[in-house]
Amino acid sequence: MALIKYGGGIIQMSGSVAGSTHARNRFGNYMRARTKPVNPNSARQVTARAVIGFLTARWHENLTDEQRNLWRVYADAVAMK
Image (cartoon, rainbow, N blue to C red; front, top):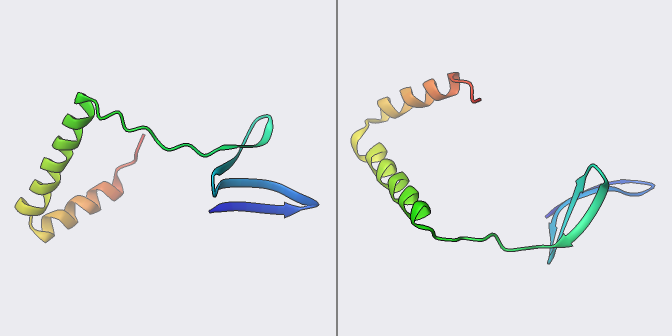
């Protein structure tokens, strides 16, 4: 879905509609063909996904609801850099 801002015509449009992607950079608005993201399935990517899956399973199997809630409270209090 594209977001459109109207004025004396179309002032700004961003997002994708059908096969087109609308965006804006320092030179102004532009449109390009929408591309499908690449999934290289490299060894590092496969390993990273396996580790995340392993940790997710441990999160659900080994922590109580109270422990998970305490981690969520802590995460909300920590600023991301």
